[in-house]
Image 1: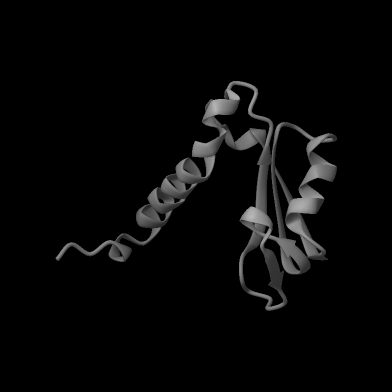
Image 2 (image 1 turned 120 degrees about the horizontal axis):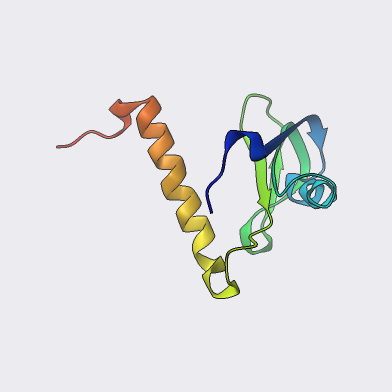
Length: 102
């Protein structure tokens, strides 16, 4: 599955209860890929049911939601790993000094 910039819907909120909760409301009404971000969240949900509160503006509080039509359920477990590697690649492109070889 390749993602084109035009396929991504971005929703910006000043505040919300949880980006994970809010993303479900928008996935059914928008295209398949939605990035929902907020300046603060009061009742966030992390992985494995962990509580995640973000009341400091300037931090990153977001959820990327998508409908993985081309991904089988057995591969769902790899999505966080793939997302982490992709994010690291982007960060290294922006700030190569993050990776210092010794």
